[in-house]
Image (cartoon, rainbow, N blue to C red; front, side, top):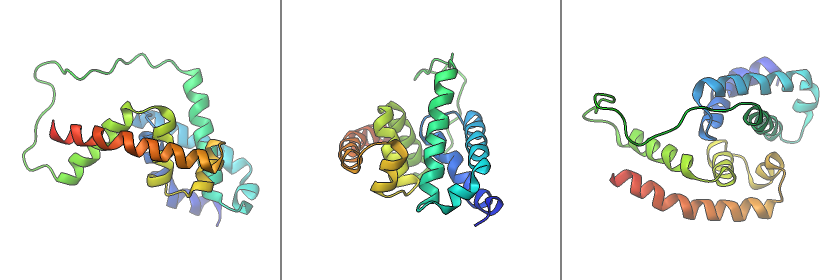
Length: 162
């Protein structure tokens, strides 16, 4: 597959992956663009890899790590919004509410747990590919996934009931 086709097919999903890894949407666009530029420079090697998606995700995660080291995020998140901010919409779809609950729960998890869940279940990488992306052993991916799912369940349940 050529680079342009790959980007056309995968870019939106790569951006969502970075957002789920805890990056603001505007910054996620920049991270993906930087990662894809790195991949473009060595596209022959990327496309010849056994798992090109795992290769690209590895570059993506590394680019995100590098960006986090360089930037200071001066935002301070809060659960309490000033009065008049936020509008409740009647008839919101359950899937959307569940998605918000999952994103909020992911935001409270450790980076290790969040990364393994996003790469395994959103990016749909296998255990070996996820291990390569994160630079850990496949057994580590299994144990992190197990612990992360155990930690995620009560967080999502609590978020859905509130």
